[in-house]
Length: 293
Image (cartoon, rainbow, N blue to C red):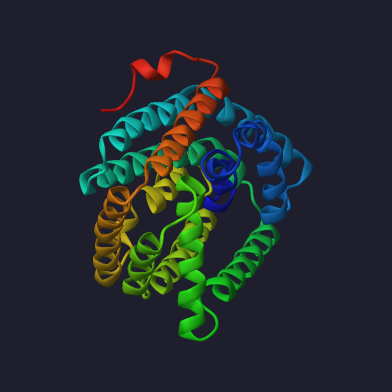
């Protein structure tokens, strides 16, 4: 499964956190249809490939529901206790590491499950994939990197303000200023991420074309995503480390300025999403006992 296709499934789980609780459950329960649609868009699968992909996706979704959703709920339970006590930079570093670990587990399993289909792709299907990736890159560049620098900065700042509003509600002038400063100090990072995006796409497609046995392809393709540091430049790694450290400081700074209502709103949202994941996994009590500390 390509990163784009896995992203469609994970987005139904994680990005849907910005929607209502009922929308989270609806999105997750319907994510298989979305991923099948994306697979056809990216690969133009023939009938036999589509059938096998559907069966494998169903098994993957079952595994994800049973294994990953309880882990997400446990992670949120632990995050809640940290938020209630007051967030420090180390808490943000913990969250980033935990989310990265869950992402690595999910994508490695997805690639293992999808490899028997990927290794049957024909040259015409790779052309469809490459065309779709190029379209996505043009859209990304237009949305995030086009226009004069002040407009780019304003657009990036507005997007980040909105991410915080989704969780804590209206922002104060002080909170907006903290966020704007963070965005300004990391203006180069978006361009570096775009170059990295194109790099992993080239690497992934090359591996998919080269290795025609699932057992040969799966570990190599998974490593593109689970060990990205092997392809990334020293400049990228430095900027990424600085971005993560500054993000941790930003979130801790915002936490110190939260009003009682903002903190209550944040805690309610965390509780609601953890409960959604428990309900979707079908094991309401299991995740609290397994909460990550």
